[in-house]
Length: 232
Image 1 (tube, rainbow, N blue to C red):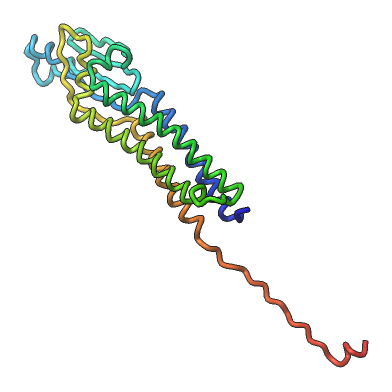
Image 2: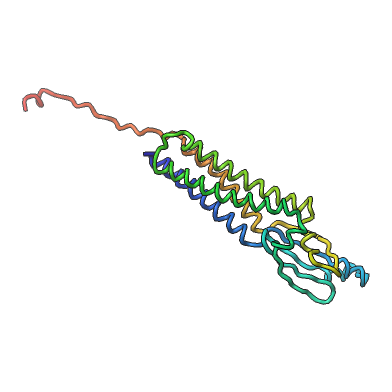
């Protein structure tokens, strides 16, 4: 059985892995990976809008991996519309890259559970095989964190190099053309970053669990026998 010191750290490692699992689920469900401002370029060109009038043509957009929302501003007031990525919009995007991001995150969910299981195993007993021990915990956390980081990098590539926001903003728009003015990553994106950070923290936790504790030595008093003790 592992000592209380290692049990405490392995328990913390299992909690971090489980928290990563929950964070990924939240990131998948909440449609707030990225938000931005979109300009109705067609409306601006039609009325030859001045700089002061541009605010009437600036709308908002936010989206996640499955759905999102767009607020159009084309000079006639705001119009809000909801949209889903699947099954039609994904065809206008880089479908392979988008599906890869989802597959990576689903894989990360499984790896987070495996790393949690290894931490619990080491908390309960000392494994006979080295691969099931602390080295196994580190291995699965490196894999899980790496997969999440790869999903994050893939999403950033889709935004920067494949004009993800502009493609979504102009989906099924026949009369108006929208231009992206600004973009910023939202909470779901940063939740994924926190998930990857949790696995990195687990590596530190496992390293700390191997710090040897100072042994507490108890001083044994030597019994002295005197002449009086012999008489008794």
